[in-house]
Amino acid sequence: MVKPIFIFSLPRSGSTLLQRILASHKKISTVSEPWILLPFLDAIRSEGTYSDYHHSNMVIGIKDFLKSIEKSGEQYNNILRKFILDLYCKASDKDSLYFIDKTPRYHIFVDEIINLFPEGKFIFLWRDPLSIISSFINSYGKKRGNWNIYFYKIDLFNGLENLTNAYKNNRDKSLMVRYEDLLRKPDQELKRVFSYLDLPFYSDALYDFKKVRLNGREGDKIGIKKYNNLSTEPIGKWEDTLSNFIRKKWCIKYINWIGGSRLELMGYDYNLIINKIRKLKNFNRLVIPDIKNSIFGFLYCFLEFHILKNKIKEHDLYKKNIIHL
View 1 (cartoon, rainbow, N blue to C red):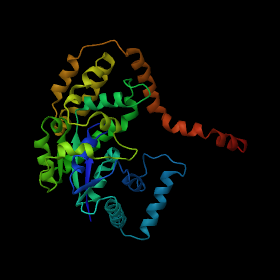
View 2: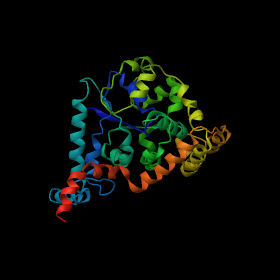
View 3: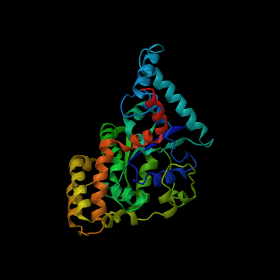
View 4: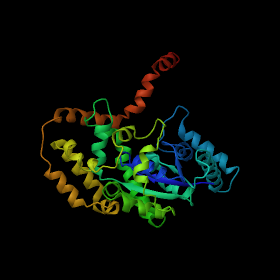
């Protein structure tokens, strides 16, 4: 039976790079991004899900059903744990000791996952928040470089809060890695990681990772294509992306929301980050589009356009129902 390795991080934090480096070891298997735990953990959580079948009613039904076969939630967790571990085994090479499940949105259930797999290894991967914001802007959307942060509110706020709380409460059983350290001093960082996994240091991983192919449709296709070797180039790329007064103002507010204590927990200095933002030159480019996108972003979050869009797609069904009202 393989043991799971979970890489907990926000999207755009370098998790695919770390995943590929570790997967180059012959004792470690992985696939692109499984996302397999999300529906099973969400099945007994009432909030946060919109569905045609009324998710909250489903949760009530499942919990009532579980009461008929168990005295506590432990039996469901045990069955789920065995089921998922069996899937990890089937997806692994026969000689593997570990299977990496790297799914960024696991930050929603990070505490549940840690409790579900006592034998698991948990790597918390952090990246400078400004670099994450910049990467969101430059990686996604019809027009790369446009302000689009409102799409990732759940990651930047809920995700960061969940991850920092979970790491704070589970330091004794987890390992912290900073993306910047992985790029600047890879040998030193990988020695720490392999030691945590009770595996001998595999120095060729720094070169062999480029041979690792992750063929699933989820995951970072951009970084895989762009970087075949470790490079420190991504570390400072955020400066050019965030240098207009609207983006600087938003970033200062966001860093203030994170706060010094959480940044310190992640290995970053609050004052240093704030000073870097303030020293950026102000460019006028994209100011007007940013204002428009900020207004749209407010409406998007407030009105939940992603749910409204699904309703609009079903407008024919709505028309049929209206006849009978």
